[in-house]
Figure 1 (tube, rainbow over the protein chains, first blue to last red):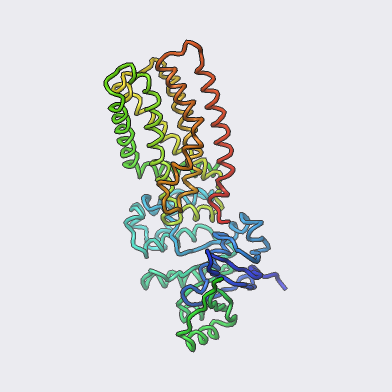
Figure 2: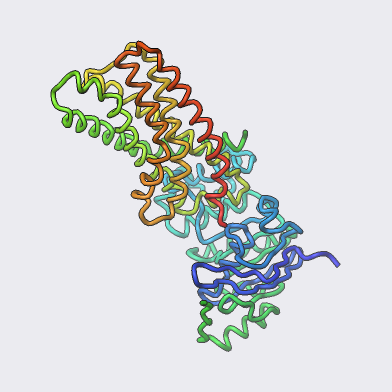
Length: 238
Length: 222
């Protein structure tokens, strides 16, 4: 049996006195698409940020493609793409310049001719020379998507990918998830839009108060959420 | 090397797009020099004697504005974190930022020299050496300043914290820069200038190597 792409063992993360993640243990198979569901503050974004090495776990350990998150941080970063809440962009610069900076650090071609199709795919071709400071939240999200499209990696983490997007943007994300799945990439999607994402996912993880509440199929998790809509996640303070 | 070039290219783009900020800092530096000249009074001898000190004081005060602003664009939308996640080398990011800050401070220092000449009647014909001292002194301010600016960038009182942390650390650089500039303006019968320049070189070597090593620890989550 092939080793899992992502293996987390007892991951916990604390911010000040509050535990955002508590003892999360997960095993994500290679090439699978997994929904991470849960209410606001349940730890979805923290989990993805820990797996992307943006923040370190306070306790526990995890490996991605066999690389330890802390000990082999740079190797993990070479395997993981993150579409996060933050746009990771420079406001004074244009969309094209932002993409060119990312391309230069990745040491890939950064010519306008090469990057233009990416901006066209996310619907920003006509605004490529405009400063990002003039962009709406949805347009910033589209720029982040273009940044993710710069490289195809074994693992892609999508944190609330539908947030701030219009109907065309929703389709863009649906296509992105499908393309990643078909290319064999392991995809984790943290989203509140369970009914939209669950059907295209192989499995789902429900987080409550930073803990794994259940792991199952997308439809089972979706059912559990809809049967218990008002449950307030417990606070983890000490 | 490619990473450093990418960092320098990024800094070039940012500095060009934020050039109005540089002019604001230049006006601040000029105003500081003007106010210091009022404090001395009309004595031409006293003005000349203290001119080097005031030049570096104006540059030091201006540097806190430049340095603390230099990380604003990096943290506003977590752009720096985004680059780290793209496997960007923290060391390349540091040297890119520090070199950009250095050039900015050096240009500002050179812009303040003619103003000092007019206001303090203090000048030198050895412009090449004066430019060298300004380059070395501003390098000594920019390396630790960039590191500390990165450290305090998330703090609420960053405008207050940065000078509190930076000023004690750069005292040797400031002292050597003032003495070397002063000897150039007032004359150097004992030939002390090379010793002060040597001291500046030593501190620059320490700051630029140590700060480059420490930057990764500062910007990565621990």
